[in-house]
Image 1 (spheres, rainbow, N blue to C red):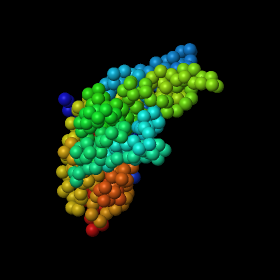
Image 2 (tube, rainbow, N blue to C red):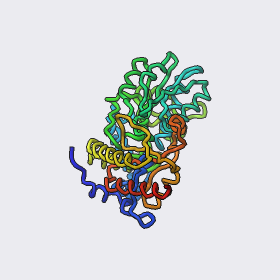
Image 3 (cartoon, one colour):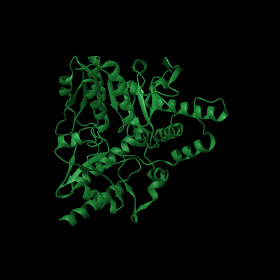
Image 4 (cartoon, helix red, strand yellow):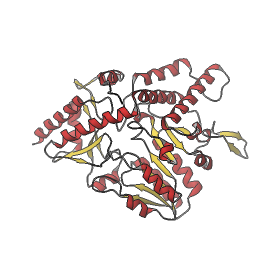
Length: 407
């Protein structure tokens, strides 16, 4: 473990030096999207200015160079999550499309009317709505595992939800609202005892801590590039090769085919049968650059530093009169959702913005969870390894000023 050089790290992110309304930018909306290091932007520029050509289809130099970059990026993702093969890495447009791909193909191939799918009460809409669509189409039932007062999953209830009709369990690794870190290895172990595959939504985890798909033994795992310091519009689906082989293609078009006639189409090998059309090869190269960047810093170092930010911010926030934090799990990531008595989250977020402090307000694409918590929305501050305790002090000072304004 090493102490992070925060000043050097912040210098890698040009946007952090800008001002908002004449104030230094304090960016605490990292759970929505992270800022990009210079190396990611340099990679995008390099791709467009040196090797821009369609991949997999050309015999000329640029096409082959672009293909090499794209497939090298796939191997970088494979190594980052320790997948057994690059064939298990499918590029998509984001975690949302990755979940839609699995939901569509899996339910078409393996589910019948009356079968059941299991999710949890803390899921993002991206891990609710795709399954609801399939339930409506095929006549399936969606079961929901509840949470306790601290915002933790009740694992005994998970066991009770599993029946002979349960076909798949889909669960977030880390809640984007509560910061709760779910015991996914334990969940996978429970599911596999019943021969049920598990999909892990890792959109809020791969940027904070080391995720090893072989150690977890999950069947599917998804995440988005833009939340792990890469560009927008790129995502990853990991699937065990046995499952990806068994699933039907999600979309049709070029590249995902082996042979096409007007009578019949045969499909390409993995992972290409799930990648219809021209991929965002520039984006995948930039994602690989982002993954190399945080790997060079060290996920263990990032995890420790962000945990210290979480501890510091929690202590300071709880000292604010009338403020309460939603989500107090024993294992928690660097996300804090809070409310202040008598102040609407939107008002708090708007006034903080005028001080140069970016937080998220609302239901955070988790309306069912908000109903479970008995609130309409919260203010959410989410931290990254480029944030500082000094910035947290600015947040606390801003909140206190707003409290005084309202009282």
